[in-house]
Length: 116
Image (cartoon, rainbow, N blue to C red; front, top):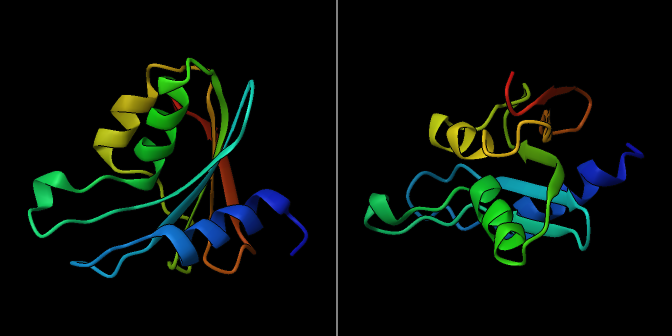
């Protein structure tokens, strides 16, 4: 696999994700009009305090007043897995944001815009 974005998202999944309740790891690599961001999902004993990896990365970019261009997401699933409904709603603030989701091994990927 030579897709650098997949490699960086997978690295975030392996090293930054902390799913203490579900064991479901998610990693994200986010390209912006400035610096890039990597994030993993963070779970808490109180599930209402969980933060998804994609929202985490988008919030970091938003806090620096950057425009997110392309979000790359990878999980441990055999098939590409799309963000949850809450994250999709959050992403709708950037209608041109591209979202690429990968299978665990990176062999499959699907790209859509945040509005699709």
